[in-house]
Length: 259
Image (cartoon, rainbow, N blue to C red):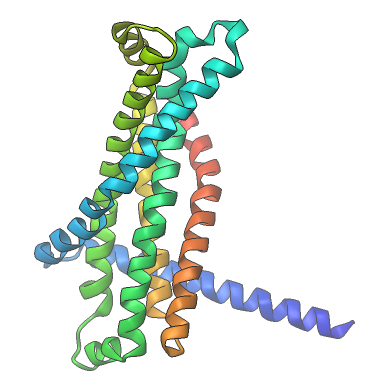
Protein backbone atom coordinates (compact mmCIF):
# COMPACT_ATOMS: atom_id res chain seq x y z
CA UNK A 1 0.00 0.00 0.00
CA UNK A 2 2.86 2.34 0.85
CA UNK A 3 4.93 1.56 -2.24
CA UNK A 4 2.41 2.94 -4.81
CA UNK A 5 2.03 6.12 -2.76
CA UNK A 6 5.81 6.61 -2.60
CA UNK A 7 6.13 5.90 -6.32
CA UNK A 8 3.34 8.35 -7.16
CA UNK A 9 4.92 10.98 -4.94
CA UNK A 10 8.24 10.59 -6.74
CA UNK A 11 6.59 10.87 -10.15
CA UNK A 12 4.67 13.98 -9.08
CA UNK A 13 7.80 15.54 -7.60
CA UNK A 14 9.78 14.82 -10.75
CA UNK A 15 7.00 16.26 -12.92
CA UNK A 16 6.69 19.43 -10.84
CA UNK A 17 10.47 19.87 -10.89
CA UNK A 18 10.46 19.59 -14.67
CA UNK A 19 7.65 22.14 -14.96
CA UNK A 20 9.57 24.50 -12.69
CA UNK A 21 12.71 24.20 -14.79
CA UNK A 22 10.75 24.79 -17.99
CA UNK A 23 9.13 27.88 -16.47
CA UNK A 24 12.50 29.21 -15.32
CA UNK A 25 13.97 28.74 -18.80
CA UNK A 26 10.91 30.38 -20.38
CA UNK A 27 11.45 33.43 -18.18
CA UNK A 28 15.23 33.63 -18.61
CA UNK A 29 14.89 33.00 -22.35
CA UNK A 30 12.46 35.91 -22.73
CA UNK A 31 14.75 38.20 -20.71
CA UNK A 32 17.75 37.19 -22.82
CA UNK A 33 15.71 37.73 -25.99
CA UNK A 34 14.79 41.35 -25.23
CA UNK A 35 18.07 42.32 -23.52
CA UNK A 36 20.78 43.95 -25.58
CA UNK A 37 23.07 43.26 -27.36
CA UNK A 38 21.18 41.36 -30.05
CA UNK A 39 23.10 38.65 -31.91
CA UNK A 40 21.50 39.45 -35.27
CA UNK A 41 23.88 37.26 -37.23
CA UNK A 42 22.98 34.25 -35.08
CA UNK A 43 19.30 35.13 -35.45
CA UNK A 44 19.56 35.14 -39.24
CA UNK A 45 21.44 31.85 -39.25
CA UNK A 46 18.78 30.22 -37.09
CA UNK A 47 15.99 31.72 -39.21
CA UNK A 48 17.52 30.16 -42.29
CA UNK A 49 17.68 26.76 -40.62
CA UNK A 50 14.26 26.94 -38.98
CA UNK A 51 12.30 28.75 -41.69
CA UNK A 52 13.86 28.33 -45.11
CA UNK A 53 14.71 24.65 -44.68
CA UNK A 54 11.17 23.93 -43.48
CA UNK A 55 9.44 25.50 -46.47
CA UNK A 56 9.06 22.22 -48.36
CA UNK A 57 7.41 20.20 -45.61
CA UNK A 58 5.20 23.14 -44.60
CA UNK A 59 4.07 23.72 -48.19
CA UNK A 60 3.27 20.07 -48.89
CA UNK A 61 1.34 19.75 -45.63
CA UNK A 62 -0.71 22.88 -46.26
CA UNK A 63 -1.56 22.23 -49.92
CA UNK A 64 -2.79 18.69 -49.44
CA UNK A 65 -4.63 19.58 -46.23
CA UNK A 66 -6.59 22.21 -48.14
CA UNK A 67 -7.33 19.78 -50.97
CA UNK A 68 -8.46 17.00 -48.65
CA UNK A 69 -10.58 19.40 -46.61
CA UNK A 70 -12.35 20.62 -49.75
CA UNK A 71 -12.98 17.08 -51.01
CA UNK A 72 -14.26 15.74 -47.70
CA UNK A 73 -16.57 18.70 -47.14
CA UNK A 74 -18.13 18.55 -50.60
CA UNK A 75 -18.49 14.78 -50.82
CA UNK A 76 -19.68 14.23 -47.25
CA UNK A 77 -22.47 16.84 -47.24
CA UNK A 78 -23.74 17.12 -50.83
CA UNK A 79 -27.42 17.37 -49.91
CA UNK A 80 -26.82 20.59 -47.95
CA UNK A 81 -25.29 22.41 -50.90
CA UNK A 82 -22.04 22.80 -48.99
CA UNK A 83 -19.96 22.77 -52.14
CA UNK A 84 -21.00 26.36 -52.80
CA UNK A 85 -19.43 27.33 -49.47
CA UNK A 86 -16.19 25.45 -49.94
CA UNK A 87 -14.21 28.69 -49.79
CA UNK A 88 -15.70 29.55 -46.41
CA UNK A 89 -15.13 26.10 -44.94
CA UNK A 90 -11.56 25.75 -46.20
CA UNK A 91 -10.42 29.26 -45.33
CA UNK A 92 -12.03 29.40 -41.87
CA UNK A 93 -10.81 25.96 -40.88
CA UNK A 94 -7.29 26.47 -42.17
CA UNK A 95 -6.71 30.00 -40.94
CA UNK A 96 -8.20 29.56 -37.47
CA UNK A 97 -7.30 25.97 -36.67
CA UNK A 98 -5.63 23.51 -39.02
CA UNK A 99 -3.01 25.91 -40.41
CA UNK A 100 -1.39 26.88 -37.09
CA UNK A 101 -1.78 23.45 -35.49
CA UNK A 102 -0.51 21.32 -38.39
CA UNK A 103 2.38 23.69 -39.08
CA UNK A 104 3.36 23.61 -35.41
CA UNK A 105 3.13 19.80 -35.27
CA UNK A 106 5.01 19.09 -38.50
CA UNK A 107 7.54 21.91 -38.56
CA UNK A 108 7.74 22.17 -34.78
CA UNK A 109 8.68 18.52 -34.44
CA UNK A 110 11.50 19.03 -36.90
CA UNK A 111 12.94 22.21 -35.43
CA UNK A 112 12.38 21.17 -31.81
CA UNK A 113 14.23 17.90 -32.36
CA UNK A 114 17.03 19.78 -34.10
CA UNK A 115 17.41 22.19 -31.18
CA UNK A 116 17.51 19.35 -28.68
CA UNK A 117 20.02 17.36 -30.69
CA UNK A 118 22.33 20.37 -31.11
CA UNK A 119 22.21 21.56 -27.50
CA UNK A 120 22.20 18.02 -26.13
CA UNK A 121 25.39 17.18 -28.01
CA UNK A 122 27.00 20.34 -26.66
CA UNK A 123 25.82 19.41 -23.16
CA UNK A 124 27.14 15.85 -23.09
CA UNK A 125 30.47 16.95 -24.61
CA UNK A 126 30.76 19.65 -21.89
CA UNK A 127 30.82 22.55 -24.31
CA UNK A 128 28.08 24.32 -22.38
CA UNK A 129 29.98 23.89 -19.12
CA UNK A 130 33.02 25.39 -20.84
CA UNK A 131 30.91 28.40 -21.88
CA UNK A 132 29.81 28.92 -18.28
CA UNK A 133 33.42 28.66 -17.07
CA UNK A 134 34.30 31.54 -19.42
CA UNK A 135 31.48 33.66 -17.95
CA UNK A 136 29.35 33.32 -21.10
CA UNK A 137 25.58 32.90 -20.68
CA UNK A 138 24.37 29.83 -22.63
CA UNK A 139 20.81 31.14 -22.58
CA UNK A 140 21.85 34.40 -24.22
CA UNK A 141 24.25 32.77 -26.68
CA UNK A 142 22.31 29.65 -27.61
CA UNK A 143 18.68 29.83 -26.52
CA UNK A 144 17.81 33.45 -27.41
CA UNK A 145 18.70 33.17 -31.15
CA UNK A 146 16.69 29.95 -31.51
CA UNK A 147 13.76 31.47 -29.65
CA UNK A 148 13.80 34.64 -31.75
CA UNK A 149 14.05 32.72 -35.03
CA UNK A 150 11.19 30.39 -34.07
CA UNK A 151 8.95 33.30 -33.01
CA UNK A 152 9.52 34.94 -36.40
CA UNK A 153 9.55 32.00 -38.77
CA UNK A 154 6.79 29.75 -37.44
CA UNK A 155 4.09 32.45 -37.84
CA UNK A 156 5.55 33.25 -41.27
CA UNK A 157 5.33 29.58 -42.27
CA UNK A 158 1.78 29.47 -40.91
CA UNK A 159 0.74 32.43 -43.07
CA UNK A 160 2.37 30.84 -46.11
CA UNK A 161 0.71 27.52 -45.33
CA UNK A 162 -2.70 29.16 -45.00
CA UNK A 163 -2.33 30.71 -48.44
CA UNK A 164 -1.18 27.45 -50.03
CA UNK A 165 -3.96 25.51 -48.31
CA UNK A 166 -6.59 27.89 -49.66
CA UNK A 167 -4.98 27.53 -53.10
CA UNK A 168 -5.20 23.75 -52.78
CA UNK A 169 -8.90 24.10 -52.03
CA UNK A 170 -9.22 26.27 -55.13
CA UNK A 171 -7.80 23.49 -57.30
CA UNK A 172 -10.38 21.02 -55.99
CA UNK A 173 -13.22 23.54 -56.27
CA UNK A 174 -12.42 24.26 -59.91
CA UNK A 175 -11.44 20.84 -61.27
CA UNK A 176 -13.55 18.52 -59.09
CA UNK A 177 -16.58 20.57 -58.11
CA UNK A 178 -16.87 22.68 -61.29
CA UNK A 179 -16.92 26.01 -59.47
CA UNK A 180 -15.37 29.11 -61.02
CA UNK A 181 -12.16 30.56 -59.52
CA UNK A 182 -13.88 33.91 -59.01
CA UNK A 183 -16.75 32.35 -57.06
CA UNK A 184 -14.33 30.49 -54.77
CA UNK A 185 -12.07 33.51 -54.16
CA UNK A 186 -15.03 35.80 -53.45
CA UNK A 187 -16.34 33.28 -50.96
CA UNK A 188 -12.95 33.15 -49.23
CA UNK A 189 -12.55 36.93 -49.07
CA UNK A 190 -16.12 37.42 -47.91
CA UNK A 191 -15.86 34.92 -45.08
CA UNK A 192 -12.47 35.67 -43.56
CA UNK A 193 -12.28 38.36 -40.90
CA UNK A 194 -9.43 40.13 -39.15
CA UNK A 195 -10.30 38.12 -36.05
CA UNK A 196 -9.77 34.86 -37.95
CA UNK A 197 -6.37 35.95 -39.19
CA UNK A 198 -5.23 37.35 -35.84
CA UNK A 199 -6.40 34.20 -34.08
CA UNK A 200 -4.35 31.92 -36.32
CA UNK A 201 -1.22 34.05 -36.18
CA UNK A 202 -1.57 34.53 -32.42
CA UNK A 203 -1.77 30.79 -31.89
CA UNK A 204 1.36 30.24 -33.97
CA UNK A 205 3.30 32.73 -31.81
CA UNK A 206 2.39 30.84 -28.64
CA UNK A 207 3.17 27.50 -30.29
CA UNK A 208 6.56 28.82 -31.41
CA UNK A 209 7.46 29.87 -27.88
CA UNK A 210 6.44 26.52 -26.42
CA UNK A 211 8.33 24.51 -29.04
CA UNK A 212 11.53 26.52 -28.71
CA UNK A 213 11.55 26.41 -24.91
CA UNK A 214 10.84 22.67 -24.78
CA UNK A 215 13.50 21.91 -27.40
CA UNK A 216 16.14 24.04 -25.69
CA UNK A 217 15.28 22.77 -22.21
CA UNK A 218 15.57 19.11 -23.16
CA UNK A 219 18.85 19.83 -24.90
CA UNK A 220 20.34 21.72 -21.96
CA UNK A 221 19.34 18.98 -19.51
CA UNK A 222 20.40 15.97 -21.63
CA UNK A 223 22.59 13.42 -19.87
CA UNK A 224 24.20 10.09 -20.65
CA UNK A 225 25.99 10.50 -23.96
CA UNK A 226 24.46 9.63 -27.32
CA UNK A 227 21.64 7.60 -25.73
CA UNK A 228 20.70 10.55 -23.55
CA UNK A 229 20.60 12.88 -26.53
CA UNK A 230 18.36 10.42 -28.40
CA UNK A 231 15.95 10.17 -25.47
CA UNK A 232 15.88 13.95 -25.08
CA UNK A 233 15.11 14.38 -28.78
CA UNK A 234 12.23 11.91 -28.60
CA UNK A 235 10.89 13.63 -25.49
CA UNK A 236 10.95 16.96 -27.30
CA UNK A 237 8.81 15.72 -30.19
CA UNK A 238 6.27 14.16 -27.82
CA UNK A 239 6.16 17.05 -25.35
CA UNK A 240 5.92 19.67 -28.08
CA UNK A 241 3.04 17.86 -29.79
CA UNK A 242 1.14 17.47 -26.51
CA UNK A 243 1.76 21.10 -25.57
CA UNK A 244 0.53 22.33 -28.96
CA UNK A 245 -2.66 20.28 -28.82
CA UNK A 246 -3.48 21.08 -25.19
CA UNK A 247 -2.73 24.79 -25.48
CA UNK A 248 -4.74 24.99 -28.72
CA UNK A 249 -7.94 24.33 -26.76
CA UNK A 250 -7.33 27.17 -24.31
CA UNK A 251 -6.05 29.54 -27.00
CA UNK A 252 -9.16 28.86 -29.10
CA UNK A 253 -11.37 29.86 -26.17
CA UNK A 254 -9.22 32.92 -25.50
CA UNK A 255 -9.25 34.19 -29.08
CA UNK A 256 -12.97 33.59 -29.49
CA UNK A 257 -13.51 35.83 -26.48
CA UNK A 258 -11.10 38.48 -27.78
CA UNK A 259 -12.34 38.55 -31.38
